[in-house]
Image 1 (tube, one colour):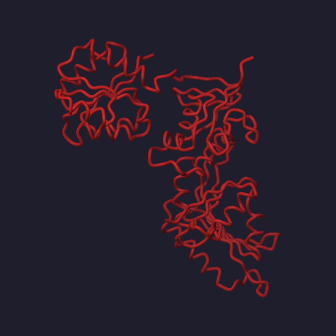
Image 2: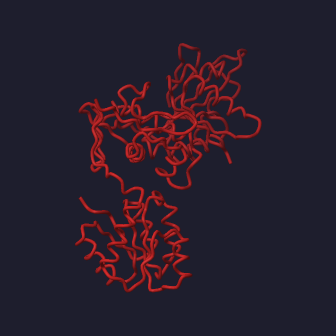
Image 3: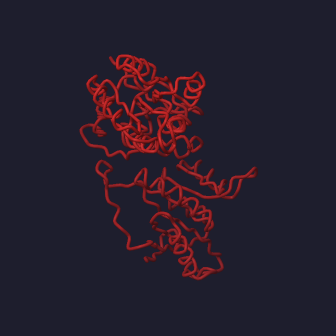
Length: 160
Length: 234
């Protein structure tokens, strides 16, 4: 586990499900594997997203990274969120236990999740977000649209 | 180069042996299996142009096998000839309704069977030009060895990326609908996963296009699908 504080006022924790295996470069890929960012929403919705991601992993050689953005109110110091950091880490571990694929996770404690997400993602990132599709756009659908508008590739994993 | 790849599906080892010998002698590449279940597995692992399918077989039987073959990946491009001792009109109608292209009753003569195979292969949509190697201004694609080189540098494609590229390249200048692409490459259960397809196309562009932001070969037809645009000959 690796904790760090970034210049943008975010506190980050990196968790690997197991001893993180190095990303093996594929010939002709300039040593880079496609990274899939999975946005943590809820346990079940993120699992739906991970199911899609595991298919992408198998068919595209992609490696999944779960991003959990947690908003800390301005009244609290960034390192002391309303819930203990261990609680958030346990959420990720519970997810990793049920995940169909190996994951790396990044917990980001921030003031404004949307802004932090924009700062975290590289341009044209591939993002998978799980959620429900309905006649009225869900919160996750709105996030997905916003990210698409920012130029990212977004796959919406619908929770049936 | 073979005249076509044929899969013989019959539970009788003697018929399989005779077919193998006869068809190989006439320039076909022949594989044989004993049941419909094995045929489906075989078809999943390799591609064939034509299937000679016996109707009376243990297990799923010829009719069900024929329907399953049609629903399988590339099943619509496959020619299927049913072989049987039954020769009533009802049997023939049933076989053709199950998806067979032709129906041959046993005993049959070798010239008749060969003529029917030739006719079925002529009609089969996949029996167009067989792709072996193409060169597109610095991009070389070798379909036999499944290798791609861009300006002399080897590009690694995943099996799905390669299948997608092959499907598009085999149909130059033709707009392929999203659903058709998904079903041809991923199978009949797919069709609505447009975001998924978009990711694969973008990955392919990053690997094979000189400038992925301004694609020259793999073009998007908005709201319809994708099109492979070969470079213009000057």
